[in-house]
Amino acid sequence: MEKKNEIKIFENKKVRTLWDSDYEKWYLSIVDVIAVLTDSIDPNAYWRKLKQRLKEEGNETVTSCHGLKMLAPDGKMRMTDVADTEQLFRLIQSIPSPKAEPFKR
Image (cartoon, rainbow, N blue to C red):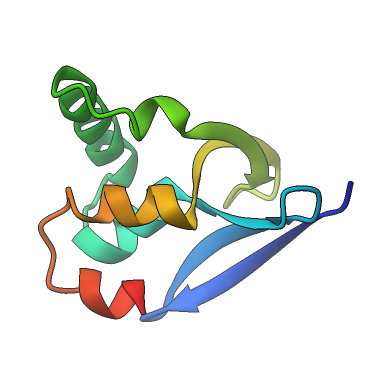
């Protein structure tokens, strides 16, 4: 199984990604995507609140988001919630942001 960590840049912000060759899927850090879309000063808190709200609504997308180790800003490998592209599109629909459409492309 080959996993390849990469960092993508979107509007001058880093989005951590991971390619899993076994599943042939890209996984993206949810917190990084939230930071891009919302300009939140605390994207972790935004994600916790969004995840809580979506769970209360019965949204199953949140339950299928997994944690993977990715390189953190402090240079260490840390667990972070990730989503594949399909899951991410569903989550983006829950975030009111004019940046959502360009990010989807």
